[in-house]
Image (cartoon, rainbow, N blue to C red; front, side, top):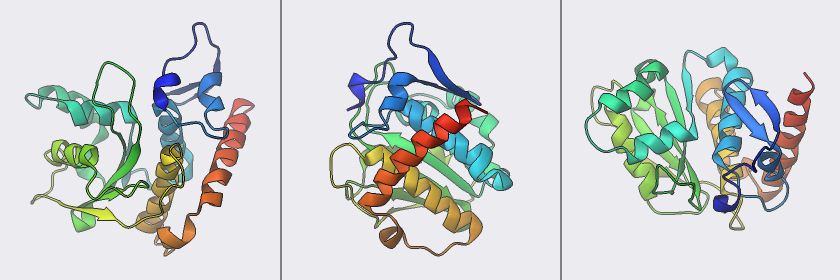
Length: 223
């Protein structure tokens, strides 16, 4: 669970500074077996996909950081404060928007036990939810889509669908599945790839991504 790893140890040295992402050793350790990924790791990987993995599509795609997603999901009141966070993202200009949604119900305390991927695809005016736990309609993702809709610039309200996708085999890999879903969705939507999520993502792929992400962080540390 992320409760045990959300707060860095006092005085802990930064392992990697990448764009707006800072990773400490306790964050990196979560990539080893059985670690529940926290918002800093997911934010880093989203930033990596945005800056390097899909940099040629920067005008078309937006990876919303987990902290902004959490704020959007739980925000109450008028739109003025939300607009401060969202206007710089220019969501109304993007074909594809991706958000990692946590089920934590607090804006002030770390918590939560599950991540889902929520995407908005402008050409279809469609929200799609990818949930490795197999929820029928994950409430946090649905709530986030409602809050986000008025900032997308769509002529009509988007539809919302839960996508049939691979299911995790344990209680801790949801964050890794979100990373894999995000990368595959970008490949399909932006690059025209045709690989099915059901056939291209397996438990072995998830284990491999943990290892590959550790290696990625190590490589960025020395560049």
